[in-house]
Image (cartoon, rainbow, N blue to C red):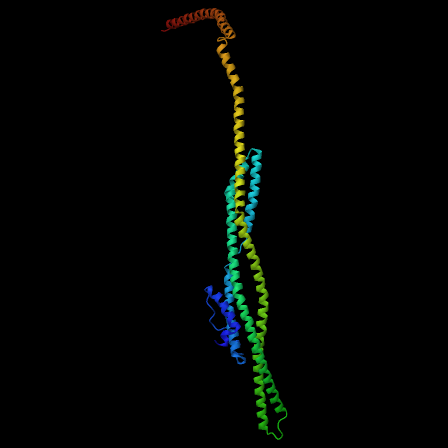
Length: 386
């Protein structure tokens, strides 16, 4: 194997790429600006430059992988739904108990109960909803933990590759410093030759010395630029590694705490689901107990009141029956009224008959007189005709 294949940077990069490839993601293939920049300092060490270029070329892939994992995380505030359901269960249970203890329900309360079942559902259904919300949160948390673990695992090896690349960059920097010092020494020598040319040097020879000096200036400037690139690589790889160490340490801490919460949440519900079921059953049973108690009490009260009513109404009916069966049929008072009416009518009719007879006789005489007077006047009228 070659040195490049065996160096630490290559080893850790290969390990990081195994995790990356397991996710089915494509690696970066286009040439990046940093690769063109590193090519400038390959003169200080081709193997080192190739290693650094290989490590930094894949940084974009790992960043994309991290963004892909983060974007797939489902974040919500479903705990509010759990709290709201528990609060509504407690409130409605207390209200129902108050109604039961009072023994009566108003029209408004009846409407409230109907609206409660429509809008929030029955209490057992709300416990089912709490379980559903818990399951959704647990599944999301488990997915988040897995995704974060992938990021941490992949970046853990990649960061080691960056640290190994920093080592390679330090080698390049050391080589660049040697080359820069050589260029500096060459420039100083060329400048000294111009300042103190050989005795008797001709103008052409002095001009040649100046050209040589100018060439060394350009070489030194070019070498200084390359040295600065090598220094930037070494410094920034060190900065990036050290800064990311604490960033990912925080991510690892968060992931660890979240894993602990997830484990406890799963264990809590797995071992306490029976408590949820018991609360649901007890709440429902209590409502049934109150209803059953009120039912038997209502039946007892109804029967007792019916017996009292039967006693009161029965005596009255019996007494009326006795009066009807053993009492008189025709009342003396009724008979007296009838007799008084018959006799009274007879007595008044005798007087009335006498008066009417007298009136009839007088009326008959008057009719006869009127008729006779008429006949007389009729006869008289006949004698007067021609």
